[in-house]
Amino acid sequence: MNERSILGLTLAITLALVGLVVIQVRWIGESMDLKDVQLGRSVDNALIAVGERLERLETLERLRAHSGLDRLRSTDSLTVIGAPTGSDDVVADMLRGLIAADEVRPVEERVPAPVLDSLLGEELRLRGITGAVDHAILDAVDQVVMASPGADTAALVGSPHTVPLFRNDAPGARLRLHVLLPGQERLVRAAIRPMLLMSAAFLLVIVAVFVITLRTVHRQKRISDIKNDLVNNLTHELKTPISTIALACEALNDPSMPHTEQQTRTFVNMIREENKRLGVLVENVLQSAVQDSGQMRLRPVDLDLHVLIDDVVRNMRIQAERRGGGIEVAFGAALHRLQGDRIHLTNVLQNLIDNAIKYAAREPRIQVRTRSDHQGIAVEVQDNGIGIPRAEQRRIFEKLYRVPTGNVHNVKGFGLGLSYVRAVVQRHGGRIQVASEPGQGSTFTITLPFEHGSNTQAPGGRG
Image 1 (cartoon, one colour):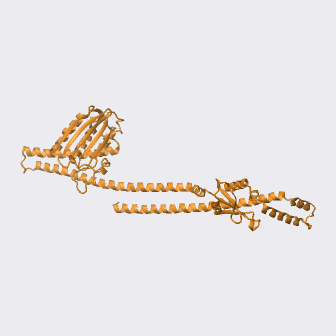
Image 2: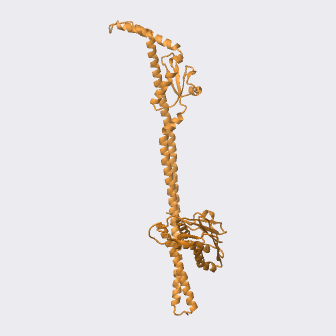
Image 3: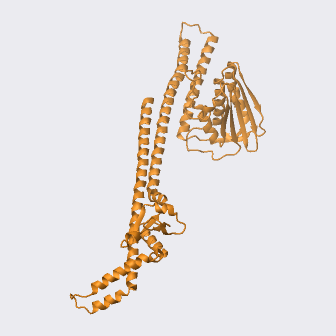
């Protein structure tokens, strides 16, 4: 997949995700509006029920207390069914008396506050609405004649939740009950909170998967590019020594060429050096393969790290001197014996010194220093090379990663050495750090503890 395809895929998924978020937000807003309407209807239905119950309660109370009820009972008991009587007149007189009496009764008697609170609470709970509500009773000219303690009467007057009380009252004496839910918005949010949380969770999952997918695609693209570079570099690196060895062998076998002892020694040395170079290349690839398979096995022995450093420096000093440089050693560690794998630690030191030589812009000047404390020993490899930008320092230990140098490829390599170095150091329970500035050289510091954990990482493998 090329860059344009990845960019197109990223754009398409981003647009789809943005569209999904917009739809989700609009849906949540519409759901909140719908819940608000449903809640308002529930409150209105509760008010209607409260009004009807208040009216029934008052009617029953007045009927029980009215003297005409006894007259009606006595009249009906003496009347033959179907015969004309004066009971109709009694009923009419009684109703007129009830209406006239109710119109002059105080509101507090007609609607006792405890009864109103109880009825409102009961009807609202039946409809799933809990919590305190403010209420007020207004007269025909919208004056508050009764209100719950601490209620905002101005807000109650403008409340949309209202119902008429005692509809048989005269128009000028009619009352209205107003109710206000102080936490109505909170109730709406609480009603849709489960669905809102689920929607947010699913949306976060989609966003996370989207981000992970994009990172994976870009990472795979980068790995693919790096592997292509690796194959190209590997082909070039292997082809050069093979061609040199082939030319040297042809020269030695060519009868037309004079074969002096000096010429023969030169060609033999050339073959030896190129063969050694091939061995190093193959060893790097094998080390990477062992590291990938997880079969790196440490065989720790008692080591004198100073002796090991001396051996490595002795072998690597020739390379530095060929370029007009040198390697200096300063042993400052009072304690320098530890348990470690001789072969792997030798490879670690060779990799660091080899990099210091290769990346020197001029005559390589390398310093190898040691220091120790009660926990472990530290080895520093300092060079005067081209340095490493700060932004690249955290990535140089990644496998196959090489610091980009534009179109200049003066230093050949596979990006495997430092990855292997870090793996070996970590298997020994240690750590590796780098301090560098472009043009100022680099200092790699390896810290190895005198005691560390298990030395076997996996069965089998190379050591």
